[in-house]
Amino acid sequence: NGALGNNTLGVAIPHWSTPVQGNASPCTGVPQYLGMHLQKLGTPNSMSLKVPAVHALLSVGSPCSVVHGAYAFLARLANCSTVQSCSFHWSFLALFFGAPAGGLFETDVRRDAWQALWIEVCGRMRKLRSRDVWGLLGSRLSPFGGPRERKAPAERDSCSSPASACTAVGGVGARVHQRCIVDGMLGRRLGYAAALADWEDVLGLYFDHPEKQTKVWAIMRHLAQSSFVLYFDVDMTIRPDSVRHGIVNLLVEAELAAGRRPSDVYARDSWPGTECVNSGFIALRNTRAAWLFLELWSEKSTWASAWDQSALAETILEVVGAEMRKLSGGTYGYESQCLPYLFPISNGLVPYRMLTMCRAIFSTGMAGI
Image (cartoon, rainbow, N blue to C red; front, side, top):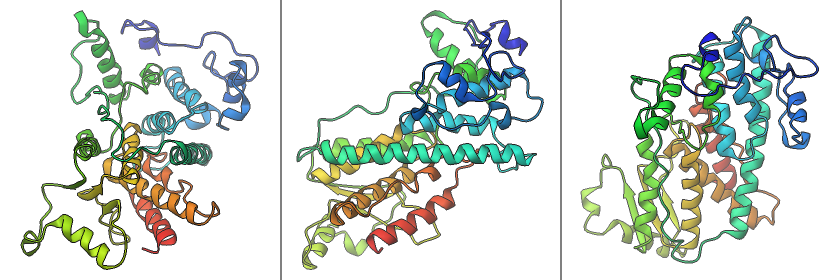
């Protein structure tokens, strides 16, 4: 707490020193019940999550610097309005303030508080995503050939090694400052979270190498100049007896022979219980549906904790669900039921097996596959 107060980083760390009326916590300015503070700021109750008191999420006796750090994320999480924002604040809150990785909470009260918050966050993200998907389907279908080439995700800071200084140096002061804050968090100096919570448009959080997120952008750039794009990872093996036929011809002719129009997107499914969708192979025709698919997939590159295969699996569910909704006249479809499993739970671990099972259940229920 003292390290935050002396402003050694040359940055204003908020202390919420103004007294809050009502049930105040022992840490000055942090309310016991966050909803009171949100009302004080003029935030409509209908737009805020039902969140527990910040102290209910933390271990007994947590220093005020930790309380302020957790409160910074919790206050923003309570009013997040996009999946990107919600996933950012929830993921950092769970990673740094939840149970030890793979471990359990020390009290039932703390476990129940995190469980209640997780249910609220899941419901919020599902509603937000369902709204966005239907809005995209209804008004943002790309014309044939797709939209103009878009830029890849903005370069984001790397945090693989400790910063050697925490003072502004020349023209790189902002980057050095950002690295210092992140390195402080990685060193479990949790009071730095009060500054980190403001960086949802600057900092990316990935559970796999972030370069894998560029796959979808590479596909989009090539598809803009082609009628058909076939992507496969370098570790994929092509059967020697199929090369002379041409993979594209085999894919298209098989459907024509069955009396179907060629599909817009070809992705290899996985056996139930083994893994989610494997992004090592995917093929797309240059159609409006394919561009919609890529747009939905690329959006997820900005979500905290998402990675290319989980993002692809969720995109397939969204598109198949949209088809089912259209065919059923709006009575049946996919409402982002598996979306919460893309993000860490309260012990900081991503429930990948749950995502795999959920995807298998809904893809079978909607498409019979």
